[in-house]
Image (cartoon, rainbow, N blue to C red):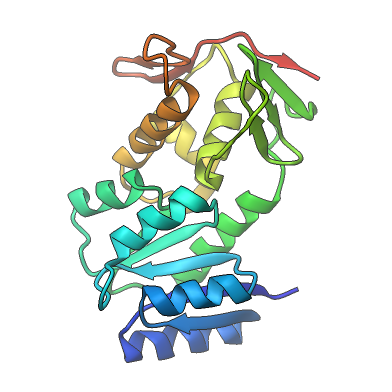
Length: 237
């Protein structure tokens, strides 16, 4: 089945270039020029990933990203001419899975799309506890096959694909300090962007979701000058 990619972009040249290249590489592409067209497509079609420009007529891309993330776990790649670190930080903090600065290579964009879709559809990579379907800690349960996280109260937690991959990387290596480079390799592989703070932002997002009501509950500890340590005891089944 072809991956369905929704390109939300009002620049005709970029729409033509990206659409033509993705279609030539066996992707189905829909184009929306603003948030309202995007909403219409999302309500009528199954979409695998959204490519989202920031500078759009009407509702801007950051607002759209924040809105999507509040209601959906669909992967989002932000496309923007604003490539400064603060712009990347904001994009990742509000829930984007990746951030690609313009001008960009269509070939690299396709590689990043495939990497995100691959991580979203496959179970966790092999590691110490990789044969287990479920990983449990402090009442939380990770199901690596269903790619789901259940809270201690039994509710389903909402995680993006990037957040889920990071949590699994931590849980499979509980008690081991992992550097930022190691976490980038485990979660993004060779396509990891040379942006050091991307992991820090993901860790911050994950921390908030694991302890929204109890700031004293520190499952992910920062180890100064080394990286991060997942502190709870993890059981595999």
